[in-house]
Amino acid sequence: MFNDYPLISIGIPFYNAEKYLGFAIQSVIAQSYENWELILVDDGSSDNSLKIAQEFALKDARIRVICDGKNRKLPYRLNQLILESKGEFIARMDADDLMHPDRLKKELSFLLENPGYDLVSGGIVSIDHKNNVTGMRTVNKLVTIDKDSKSYPIVHPTVMARRDWYLRNSYSLNYPRAEDYELWCRTSSVGDLKIAILPDIFLFYREFGNIDPNKLINSYNDSYKIRQVFGINSGLRNFLKVKMKCLIVRLLSIFGLVQNLAKKRNMKFSSITEEKELQAVVNTIVNKSLT
Image 1 (cartoon, rainbow, N blue to C red):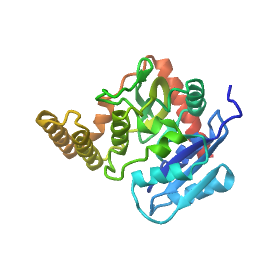
Image 2 (cartoon, rainbow, N blue to C red):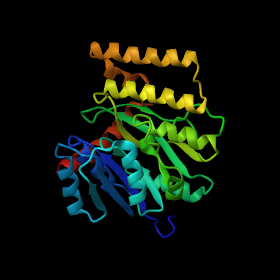
Image 3 (cartoon, rainbow, N blue to C red):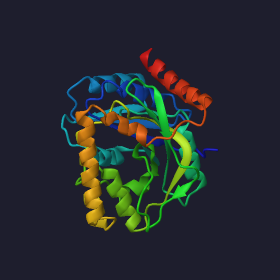
Image 4 (spheres, one colour):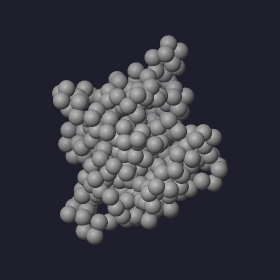
């Protein structure tokens, strides 16, 4: 199925992620597809994150750690990961999420079988700060993007892309809270966002109990600036909508309810059986990391 088993480079930038980083790394080690390299880039952490990363690297030759002691923010580190990668394909991931065990196998299979696409992404299962599954977000069928698209149902950490695509499409450093959205807008505007969004679950995405209201507000503001640049819904109505969303976040934060935003955008599981099966996958990854 996998001709010559191409190498996949997995990039995880991290900053003060000691609470969850070990789980994230273990989910990579647990992948059913084994020809990968994991690049862990420290962004100037002051906790034990770097030590955790280095301990994993000592145990598995496929893992390497990069550290310069500086805090350069996510877009810079993402570009660094692209340049450091050796694989034909690059997979994104955040330091507090978990990969589904078959993520790499399924995404690589799709890209090998569909050379007309440069990127693939998929759905997520939302998990809370205690590793409990709380909901899911996914499309019902394969979705593609064209130059006239106004929205992008792409969950950034689920993306796998051909390295050549990333080399010609780096992340902008101007929007540190919406670098992915800017990349989708820019590449879509020139017809270079050949992505397939699949209904498959590829990631356990940590949300409830992990939402920072200030970061969320900055994301709303950065996204609005990007829409202005590319002429996407950038009028007064959209400006007022953004300000209203920021106000709602501030009010929810005051009353200790901001974490509920994670639940609002999720779908319910199709059955209790599905929920239990997905929880079992999470438990296996987490328990293995703790041993």
